[in-house]
Structure formats: structure tokens, C-alpha cells
Length: 111
Length: 114
Image (cartoon, rainbow over all chains, first blue to last red; front, side, top):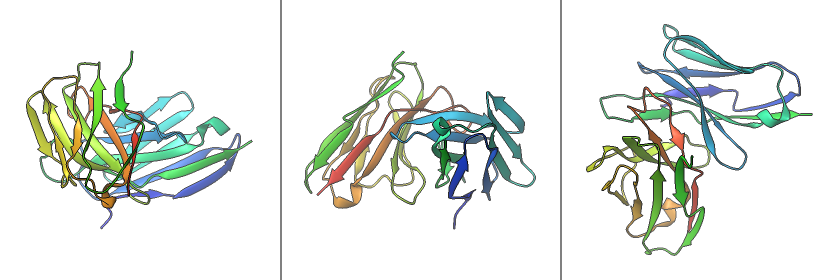
């Protein structure tokens, strides 16, 4: 049973395109994280949100708690946006730090 | 500002060998955790710590030990390496409950067990 589902698994875009990556989850959450994993392997936190919308540069993250769904949007995509984007949410129970991670969406932006 | 520092970056072990993956953070974060990342799977929590002297098991703790003698350091020990422990390991820290505050990751350790 996958508690965090990301779609698509792979995405190829042309430079300049508007990109949407989706995350659906089945558990109750207090917060949702979006992470970026660079081709070299390093992981960077992009957003943490529990409601509404957040924006940072060309990246926008939205969340709909009622529908248990979040989206990550990239405007005016660039080849340097090529990375794996990972969604993570709180898991069951009270264990501290018990985040559940999606498998990631691999984005490739072509020049 | 170094952030989270993991060493080594790469390691090859033979079955049965032991080793310690080092993790240090300089942000005075209370929460530290170890994850493993395997192909086709999301990151999975191995062990975590909510402060010096306090550790607990995550989703996949078997075969690994941790300790937290200081706020800065959170080493992960493989007692007797097995091929199933071939993976990429990430250490992460956050200043509060990582369910509700941003995570800071190390650059990862790629471990191969033959």
C-alpha cells in the first residue's frame, strides 16, 4: 500500500514550459514537504506547507488538505531544474520524525 | 556554514565487516535522522534522535545502531554488513519536529556490500 503517490514518475519538458508535479497521500498530515534531489545526489528542501500556497522564485507549491493532494509547479522551466522532486508527509502514529516519502518524479528539461 | 556533513561519500565493504557512517551538523539542531534510499523506493527512516542521549528506531532499523552523545554528531554503525545494506544513506537534521520544519540533508554515502 503506497501512502504517498507521485505523478508522473518521469517527465521530460522543453525549456520554458510550465511544469506540474503531483502528490497524493492517504494519511492525515500536519505538513507536507517538497524536496529536490540533484543529479549528483544531494537533497535540498524546497517547501514545507500545511495549507494554501507558497512561492519561491519560479517554484510554487500548493496543497488541498481536504482532497489530500499537493502540486509543485515550475514556471519558465530551465535545464538546471532537471532533478528528482520528492514529496514527503507525516506518517501514522506518534513517532517523531516519521515522514513517509514518495518515490519521486524525475524531471528532465531539454534546452 | 557547513550544514550537515557526511563521511565517507563512498564505501565498499565485504559481507560481515563493520563500519561507521559519520554525520555532523553545525546548526544546533535537536532532531537528527538517518535514511536509506534504494532504487524504486522512497527514502526510509532507519533511526532518529530528538536530542543528545535520545535515540529511537525508524522503519528499517535492523542491522544498524546509532548513538547521540552530543548535539552535533549522530553516527550510524553497521555491525555486520550484508548485501541487503547496499544503498545510499542520508543523514538529515532539523531544528524542530521534522514533520513540521524543514529538513537539512547531508550529501549522502553510497555504500556497496559485496
